[in-house]
Every structure is written in structure tokens, then in C-alpha cells.
Image (cartoon, rainbow, N blue to C red):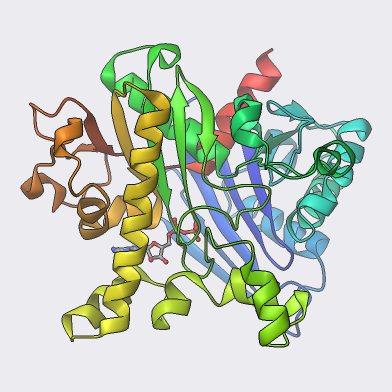
Length: 402
Ligand code: ADP
């Protein structure tokens, strides 16, 4: 079956067309600057030949419908495309950021599901409306194809109350659903499954810590294949030090800023989400730039790396305590897959907990899963590339097969 995977943002649509039999990517594209004066579409098309073709469009793209139509026109273009007709698309899988407590797994989209995703808008005011735009456009363009929602939060719905509750007045949970939800669930679940397969164990019998370090970052304690704790909370702001997000701070910081810096709630929100993290500490949020700056003696860059990797290490230790015995630690996403220094620093000093890294192997770059622990390390440490699109396509297929 051909599955179209859509990740719809407020001004962009990321999409991939995959063949679920072979798991091959047929088209991968990005529509950007929707609603601006000029928009862009860039799509890599993989026809039967091995050579990829890159198609680009630069024109006004007033709305998501136009963006998606342009993408489909390219997919079905007689010369540049890979399908004769859009009816060959058997299903559409949608990334949906927040499923609240409603959704424990992926689900076929119905009117009730749409209403429930709408009901989660207060918890994800930027993401869920954009995801719904993508769903509505796809339902319109592919009226006969089933649409499946895959939630970032669903994998974490197994987290017990002791880990998801904030110690706040209980009514806030009952009335406003204030609690920890966790995100990046599709990625954590995907790499956990891959890790178990590599270890040759059923995921239901595998304990591990999955460490997703991209521009956003989160870590999950996986017990017997289930998420039992994760670092992101009610929103993706909690937990690790990220590209531009602060991660954990003293909650009293907000009062301090309001009282002493005359900042209103919007300014504080912007600062914590967009101007903090690595960027706040050193002005850069790309790890590659940070390493370059450290090599030139930039002290702020060094402190940014130290603060980030120390926080990683602290949570790894916390999750070891939460899990008791662990089989593996898995690093994934942009930084996790590519940055040997961040990996090494995040694991420093954990030898007496059974974590031993082979520094030579850790220095290698690999597109395939790579074991970076030594053979006598009690805990296996692996780098496993994440693939959220493939994970969504697999989820879509599995929901339809049920
Ligand atoms: P997201 O999907 O969250 O936007 P990614 O998982 O693509 O992010 O990760 C992006 C980040 O990965 C970049 O900001 C950069 O810090 C980091 N990154 C990418 N390539 C490398 C590399 N070769 N070395 C170190 N860091 C890298």
C-alpha cells in the first residue's frame, strides 16, 4: 500500500509518500512559507531509477489546500511523478502533536476524533490547529482514503500517575487536565522497537532509556516496552536543555521575571521557548556551530554544552533509578545520531553503573544503527536513527489491518 504521511505545521507541510510493503520512500517533500507573499515547495522524488530528482517551486502558496494540491500534482506528474493518479494512495497518516488523555494509540480519523483533537487545542494552541488543517485538506483531496492520526503523546499514556501528576491543587488536573503528557512519542516508540529487535528480545521484555536529541529534546524511561516516564511535560518545554527551549527551570522564575523585569506572560513564554536553551546560553542553537565556537575558545559555547550534557546525564541517572535494570540506552535524532561529544559527555561517569563506551566506535558516523558500548558494558549503548515518517506509515498500516 502507498501511504502519504503528512506533518502539517502552521505555515508548512512536511510530507512523504511511502510504500509500506518495501518501506521505501517514493517522495519526500516540504512546502514552506504558506500564507506569505511567496511560498516554496521542495520535493525529492525517487522514481524506479536510483537517482533522486529534486523538484522546486517558488510561487505564492496562500493556504494549506494549495500547498497540498501542488505536492499531489508533482506526485502524479506524468514526467516527474511516481504515481499515475492520486487514487493510488491507499491511506493518509497524520502526525498530531497532542492527543491529551483521549488517545492511547493511533486511530482512524472520524468526526468524533476531529472533535477530540479540537478539544486538545488549549494544551497545544500552535500545533493542533495546524495538524487539523492538514487533516481537513487531506480528507478533501483523498475522500476515499482512510485517514489515520498518530499522536506524539500516545506512547506516553502508559506513564503512571506518580510520574504524570504535578504536585498542584488537584482540581487543576480534574478541571483543566493539567498534567505531564510527554512528546516525541512516535520517535521513542520507534527506536525502542528497533532496539529490542537488535537485541533479539521482545520489546515487551526490554527496559531502556531512549534519548531523542534534536532541536527539541526528550528522554524516556521504557519499561517492558512501555513509557513509564519522560522528560517533557504538559508542554514540550519541560525537561532537557534544547536548541531554544530552557527545559526545567524553577517555577518561581516566572514571578521573578514579572516582578523584577516587568515581563508579561507572552514575553516570558517567548523567552523560555524561543530564546533560551543553547541559544540563550551562547547565542547558537546548532551543535555544529557550538563545537566550532568551543574550538575557538568561546566560553559561553562551552558552558552551553556543559549545561546540556549535564542535564542529560542527570536524567539518565534518574531513569536508571526509575527502571532498576536496563538493557540499553539509545541515542537518536540530529544531535543524538551525529554528535559523539554530546553522547560521551552525557554518559560520563556512568561506568560504575555498567555503562562503558568504546570511544573509537563512538567517533564513527553511521546511517545504520551503531553499538557504541564495549562488549563488557552491562548496558548496551546504541545510536539508532529515528524515522518518524516510517513510524507513522507503519502505524497507519497497522491501524488499518486491525
Ligand atoms: P528537529 O527535527 O527537532 O528539528 P533534528 O533531529 O533534525 O531536529 O536535529 C537538528 C539538530 O541536530 C541541529 O540543530 C543540530 O544541533 C544537530 N545536528 C545535526 N547534524 C549534526 C552534526 N553533524 N553534528 C552535531 N549536531 C548535529
